[in-house]
Image 1 (cartoon, rainbow, N blue to C red):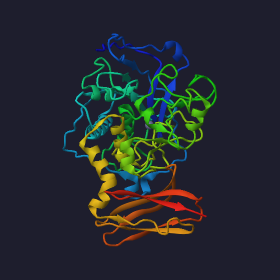
Image 2 (tube, rainbow, N blue to C red; image 1 turned 30 degrees about the horizontal axis):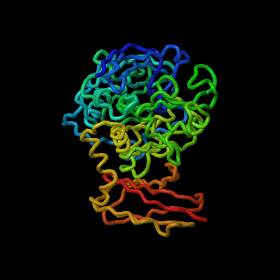
Image 3 (cartoon, rainbow, N blue to C red; image 1 turned 45 degrees about the horizontal axis):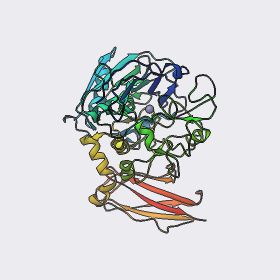
Image 4 (spheres, protein in one colour; image 1 turned 30 degrees about the vertical axis):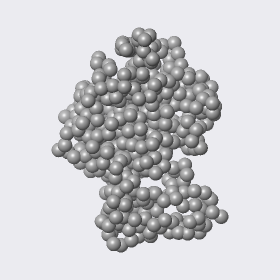
Length: 473
Ligand SMILES: [Zn+2]
C-alpha cells in the first residue's frame, strides 16, 4: 500500500481569482517550473499505482475591476437574484473547517454563510480545511482561491493517473490524505470598497455580493478546475514557450491530467487529452482551447441539461477565465447555472451552484449532498412530473419562423433561450412570468439565423426542458 509524504513545491497554482468584472481563474505555471517541480510522495513499489500529492503555490491573479459591466440592481428579481434551494435549518453532509485570518465580523459571517450552502451540496466524511485570508490584493483583485494540494492514485481514486483536488481526494479516500495542510486556500481583497456582506441576496447596485464570490471560489477549490492553458510566447512559459501552443498537465508534458481535464472535448467530441489529435503541447490544442467550442462531456451533465456543458473558450486565451468556467454566453447573469461562469455583475447574487455544476461535481467523483441532488433531479424531469408541457417546434425544420407553445400548471417565472450547437446563447426568447392555464407561444425568428441546428432551452423555477429546432434556407 502506498505511503504518503508531502513536501511543498513552489510551482503551480490552481487559483481562481475573482474580480468585480468577473470570475477570473488562473492556472499558471512558473517559468521555473521545470526545475522546481518535485514529486511529493514516496511510495513503495508494491502497489500498482504510486500515489502522489503536490502542494500548490500562492495564487497569481490577473483580474481587473470592470469599467463597463452592467449593474444588475435594476434588473428584475429573477434576473439579479438566484436563490439556493438549501435549507437554512438543515445540517449538511460535509463539514468545512475554516481558519479565518483577519476577517471582520460581517465578512466572516458572509463567508460562513457560503460555506453552509456548500455543506448541503456535497458529501464528505472528511472535514474540508479552508484557510481564508482577508488581505489587500493588488490590481483590483477581489479574491482568489484554489485547491491547496492535489492527489493522484490514492486509495479509492476512481480514475488512475489523474489529479484530484485534495478536498475531493479526501472524500473519495474516506481519510484525510494530507493531515498537515489545508485543502483550499482563499484570499479576499480587504481593500475593495464595494463588498456587500449581507446574506439575503439583496445586493445593492454598485456593490458586489461577497457570498457569491466565496461560493464561486470554493467551487474551484472543490474541484472545478482543469490544467489546460495556452502559451503566450513571452515571459514565463505556460507550455513550451511557443506562442499559441496549448498544453495540459501539472508537471512534465504528457504526465497526468486533472480529473476535470478528462471530460473536456472539442466540438466533434474528441477529448482534448487525446494526444493523437492534440499532442501535448501543440498548436492544435492551443487552437481548440480558443475555438469557442470546448465542452464538458460528463454523463451527469448531459443527463441534466440535455447537452454537454459548454466551457468558456474565447478566441483570445484568458488565463483568468478560459477553460475552468462555464461559458458566460450559455449561462448569463440571472441563469440558475451561472455561478461558475467567469463574470459577475454588481447587484447580482447567486446563492446556488446550480444543477449543471452539481452534475459536473458528480461526474468528477463527488457524492452529491441533498441540495445538489434536488437541483439535478429537478432539472430535466420535473417538466413531466409537474405537468408542464412544451410542444415541439412547428414547423421544424423552419426557415422564417418556428413556434413552440409552453404550458405550466403553476404560475412561475420562465426563461427561454435559443442556443446554437456550440452552446452559445443566440437570443433570449422569453424572460418573465407565465401563468397557469395561460399558455405562451415562443417564436424563433429565422431571419438572422444561419442554417443549422439550434436548441430552445426553457427553464422554469422547477423544470427545464430543451427542444431542437433546425433552421434551413
Ligand atoms: Zn472562477
